[in-house]
Length: 257
Image (cartoon, rainbow, N blue to C red; front, side, top):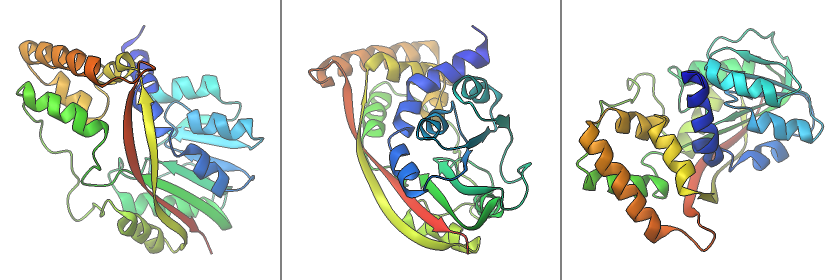
């Protein structure tokens, strides 16, 4: 398997499942019209939308993700990156941006671009991870990293002039700056259930900050992390053999006037 294919597959079986938690809420709230799946990853949201009979266009900045998304979707899946999209103004009835805005380099410009490609009266549904994180899997892995003396990597935070408050208020403010009206703003809660080997695939595959941090360690520390991970998982798994983590996200639904 090629390196990029392996990375996308690692995401799909690990943190892709985490990010799938709010999908039904986003689809329920954005109606039945044409949908832009912004930052589609491996295409899970778009595929679920198509199963509901919706017409979907998807994009992601990562070629590795688009490769899998194209296999899952009937509609087009293209490589593109915010804040500059190759779509005409008002092209879509709705946009779903599921855990996308917290990853872009220019959040305000990116939300404005999503608004540009949404028709008048259309809806933009966005999720983001709160900061500081609200416990869950991050605390579980973080405790393992501390016990193994993992050395943190340099901060991945944006410059303060570009960043936004990772909260309901902060995400809503981006929508309002883009000229949209807030229809809903709330926290979403669910339980993420995952097999230990699937979670480890994400860590070992270098996915997200946790994976990048793991890969930056010495071989000895990586071995210590894996040993501790296996030990903690043997104590924490449920009767189904899965880890279960309470999870929280920020959610905003905005309407373009």
